[in-house]
Image 1 (cartoon, one colour):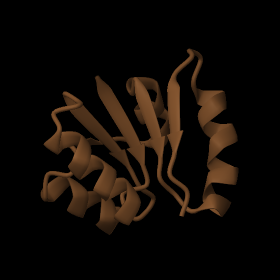
Image 2 (cartoon, rainbow, N blue to C red):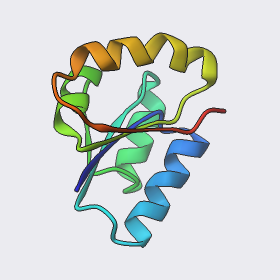
Image 3 (cartoon, rainbow, N blue to C red):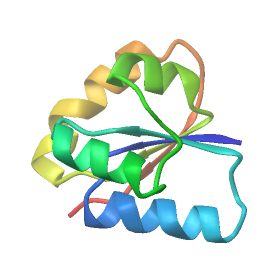
Length: 94
């Protein structure tokens, strides 16, 4: 399964670590609007690839939204507009 994690801070990073530890996924795609967070997550192996939001949402089979609730309110409509297929979406709100 290919998982996209939007938000690579404490919650998203922790989810990535656990998913990899349990061999739940073959690939984790990361999205974060803070370039330093994104590059760090890629460098230390939390994620396998960085992508822009639109490409990441279209590539993931499971979308994990791990952002603060105020950001989730703004991001969720964009995510739903991008996706033309039914997908699984999980929320981890901070």
